[in-house]
Image (cartoon, rainbow, N blue to C red; front, side):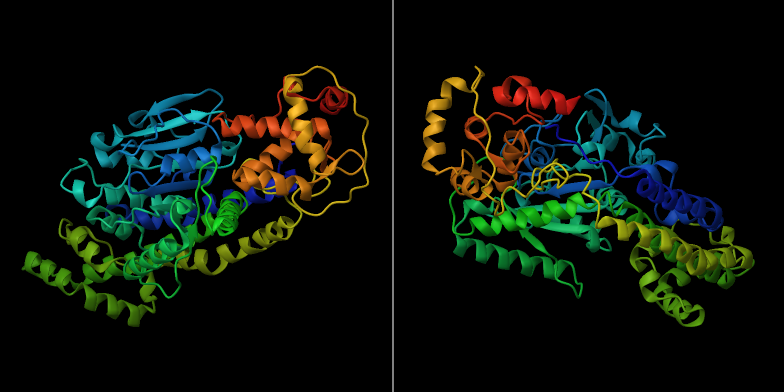
Length: 543
C-alpha cells in the first residue's frame, strides 16, 4: 500500500490564502500609511513585506549551549542538515534558518537580506557582523514543506559572559520572536544554569509569552527525585522573569531518536513529547490566525504610537527652549502615557515599553513630528472595529474543517498515524480476525528471519498475524521513543491492515536493530526491503 501524504483540500487552502491576502491588503491600505506618517519604523519594528505574510510558519529554537538544540531539530526533521554539528562545546555559533529547497545548499546572510521571497530582508540593520553569522540551510524535506525552523547560537553561560558577539544578540532574538509562530526554549535537566545573557534573552521574549514553549530536555538522565527538584527550580526561576498571571508550561522530555535510559518517569516523557509535537503539528493550521493576531497587536501599538507622537508635537514650543522642553517631555513620558490613556481611552497594554521609548526619543527631532490626522486615525479605527471582524467568519469556517483534516505534519514528526493510510491506530486494541498467505521470496531480511521468527511465534500470533497491542508490548522494550517506533510500524505494515505477519514483523525487527546501531530510518520503505509477498500488491497500489 502506498503511503499518501496529506494535502489540504483546495477549498480549505483557498480559505487560508484568502485570509492571508486580505490581511496583506488591509496592512498596505490602512496600517502602512499611518506607520510612515508617524515614523513608526524609527521607534519599533520595520514595516511588513509580502514575504512576512506569505512565508510558512516558523519555529525558533533557542537555549544555552549543550542543551540539545541541534539534536532537537534533527529529531523533528529526522536527518542532518547542512552546517549542523553536535557536541558538548558551543557548536552552533550562528543563526541558521532551515527552509525547504529542491536542492541542498547554504545561502549566506547577506544574500538572504536581498531576496524578496525570504522573510529576512529587514535584518540588514543588524550589520555585517550579524549577517556573517546568519545563514539559510535549504534541503528537500517533507517537514520543511510546511514549516521553517530557526536554529540559534547557544546562549553563553556565566563562565563565558565576558565574550562579545559583536552584534545585539537580544535585539536579534526579539526580531525573530515577533515574526515566528512558536519559540522553543530548551534547558538541560542535569545542568540548569541562569546566566546574564540568558536573562537578557528572556527580556527579548517579553510580550511573546503566548508563543513560548519551555522544554526541560534530557530528562531521562536524572532520577525522579532529581527531576522534581530541577523542575521546581526552573518554574521558580521562570516565574521571577515572566511575571504573567498564567504559569508557563514546561515540557519534560528527551528529544532525540536514540534509545532512552531506563527511568521511573519514562511514560511521562512519552506523553509530554506527544503533547509538544502535537502543538508543533498544528502550526500550519493556525498560521492565518497567528498572522491576524500579530496584525491586530501591531495596529494597537501603531495607534498608541500616533497619540504619543502627536502629544509631543503639540507640547513643543514654536521657537525658544526647544531642547530643554524636549528633555522635560522625555522625562515626563510615564505621566504622558497616563494622560493619553485617560483622554484617548487607549488601553495601557497597547503602549510600548516606556524606558525604551525614552531612549529612542533622545535622538529624534520633535519639530518633525506630526499631529493627529483624522482621516488616518479613522482608517485605523475602521481596521480594528470592522475590517478585522469581517475576516472572522472565514477563520471560523477554517476551524470547522479542522475536525476532518489530518495535520500537515502527521507522520513526518513520526508520532501520529494518518487515519486515511491505516485502518486502525496500530498502538491500540485491534481485532485478531484477519489472515494472509505466507509466501517467502529471497530479500535482504531473509538471512536474519529465523531469529526474528522465534520472537514472532513467542508472541502468540493469531491466524498468522500479531495485533498492534502485542507488537507494542515487545517494541517498547527496546527503549526507543514511541515516535520512532510509530514510524517503524508505518514502514513495516506494508499492506496497511493494522497487523503484522511474520514477514512484516521480521522487517520491523530489522529496522529496529538498524536504528539501535545508529542508522537513520528511511522516509519511505525502499524496494529491496519490501517483503516478497507484498511486492506485487504494493506495485499495483503505487500505480
